[in-house]
Length: 230
Image 1 (cartoon, helix red, strand yellow):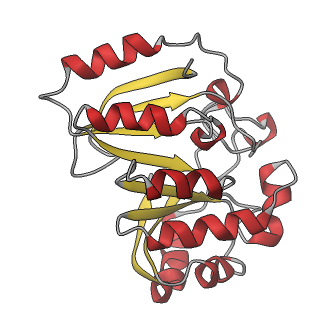
Image 2: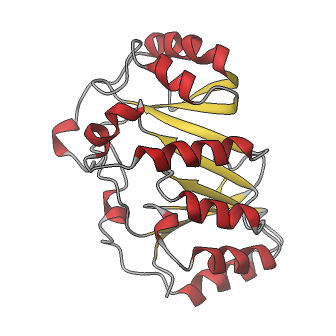
């Protein structure tokens, strides 16, 4: 059974210029304190039956262009390729969100042409992953996934700019790590919502000027750098 724990029925921002819906699969192998999806991570919402989800897609065939599969971490689920294949067979484009911890699964869905776009979250410099993610991380797998995503024609990397984790000193390391990529989004840290780590609630984010300075540091490494959430 597909562990669907949430759904956004219409989105104009998750996969532009496509009109998409976003489906959230439950569970994650990271515990990033700044994550604003704790309900999905801990599987608190009731499961949405798979038949209900595909029934929704059937009704929206002429209204939606794409489905974004997010989480949690979708690549944890062995049934992911079959799930994506069902979506593709209905004629939708597929965007996959991932933290990059399962390069074998990524290669599977890429090789079988089950994804049209991949968005990979980068948490920080590799040496800081354990601290940022709250768990022990195999960074070799992160590096493998980065290279796989970079080879995809349509891809993006995303970096949430959290004070205390990301600064102007270490962001250049991230640029070096992702050098040659098509696109990176710098995402503003939001502390006004429920987070995995309550101690981060109310933490002051960087100013727009500080984010612009980080954007300028990264520009030499990417085709495009954009800021989200400001």
